[in-house]
Length: 205
Image (cartoon, rainbow, N blue to C red; front, side, top):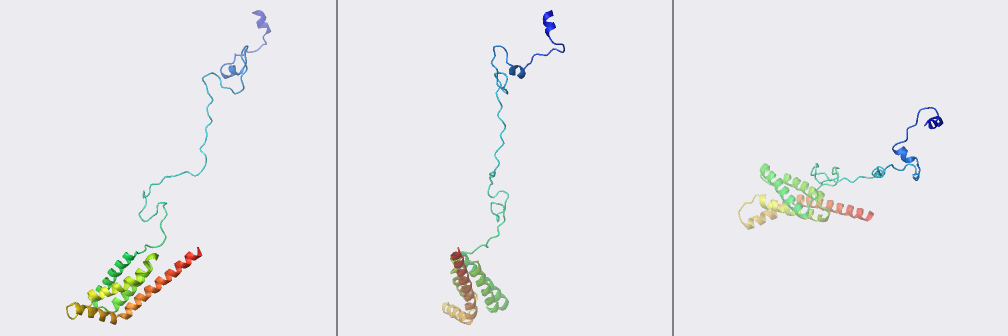
């Protein structure tokens, strides 16, 4: 005991290493372990925290949720073409609008005069502008039909009977031929202009 105390250098005694430091120090009959090896049998290396790859994230949107009916699903407002009329819609609008204008003229002036003619021009213009491209022929066809129907229903007749109705219709068409041809010709010109413009667009593509 005295000899061991004498051989020790003066100073504080060093405590034996514990834990990971003891595992790193090789001892007698124990193979040296590599640096950084985990201590103990049950401990395993923790996997490094991996970050999600940077990139565009997919977002699922429910169509119609929190959006108005006149807006598309991507949230942008619709700024395209106006709503177009089909062939059936063009005929219905032509008849209703022409009858409405003829009824107003009949109530105000007790007949079909210049108000009815101007209203027919406006109706033909709107039909030719708003009809679909595939139904362009519906505009110049439905206009004269609505004009004749308005004369047949609202033109005052002197005597009852089918013959009197036919004579009154023929007379009304002859007296108002200027308005009839003007409105129909306007619709034909607009339809032709739209057809030519659409053909040029297709050829340029």
